[in-house]
Length: 453
Ligand SMILES: [Ca+2]
Image (cartoon, rainbow, N blue to C red):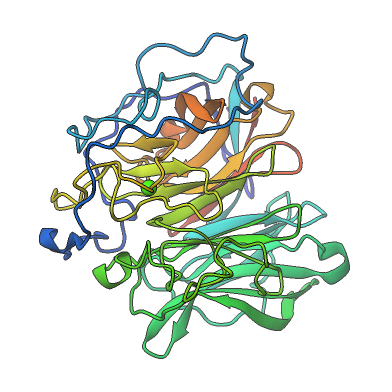
């Protein structure tokens, strides 16, 4: 192990997962009020749902990704974790939670590329391998070289409502960047009467004093509401040039009850064209009163989203206490929040009568206790052959890099990497070199790189 020599690097050598059980559950995004406190239990406000529906276990098409069919599935106990918060909710099918723990065989090295970011949120790679890095509360965007040199803050971005979980969130490089120099970002937009997530794009003018030009807001989450919580805000471009954006339900009751309503953007995944217009093959374009950008409904707060090797969207959403979920959102489907789920209020009060209900999708996987997911990538690099097609998720309260091994669109193994670092992981992306790049959520947030030792 090398030790600190400025401006880079400490390498922590880590093999496999730590066995330290999580301490008592903490609010998922500490630093802000407990997300659901203040919502009285009788106020979960959702109609009783139809219990006794058979487990939704069918209809998942096979995927050739993941563990080769001839390899035996992992066996043994799950990742060490506390007892479930809601033990009375059973999984809908075997392997929906607490699958066997697995351990990465390749020795891992973690290198610090840069530090001094105030609660950084997202990374996007420019074609020349420099990175765009956002800072949530300050609304600042930086360009960082692979060696860790940081530009001045990019000038010209609109101001953000940086309170709580708002601020400057995701950033993506446009698919036609080489021609257009367009970059895209999400942020909590201050508005008359409250705030709301917005997506903007602009031309990045590179140089010693970088700036953006011709800023256009291409999407506004509606309605406006006064809340500093559950903005969502992850973006994913698809190869056909569409843009998925994940939208939270604002946490407070007035927002939560809109998560399954088609006339609201709250608690949705939306799909738009890069200029903000609506793709005409979206599922609700012909539904009276529906927001036409909607792709899927019934989400709580999705802070993790990525495409798999078949270019299908996967998301992980923050649940309440004991209800984080992995989903594969499909057009026009309903993922159930707040009617169904596997968690409970932070107060311990029940939210759901049942974890299942008619017309609503089951999560592919859930965590109770939670991992507090933020950031996601599905590995396709060559540095870690054993990681191909595995899902990686940043863990905030779990202070882990969560790895999921998949087969036939189901989770068959789980690992919590980097527990030894004791850091909240906000973002994980795969770099062009096949390394994983992470951001830690802290007032002195770090940009880390994960490679084989
Ligand atoms: Ca759900």
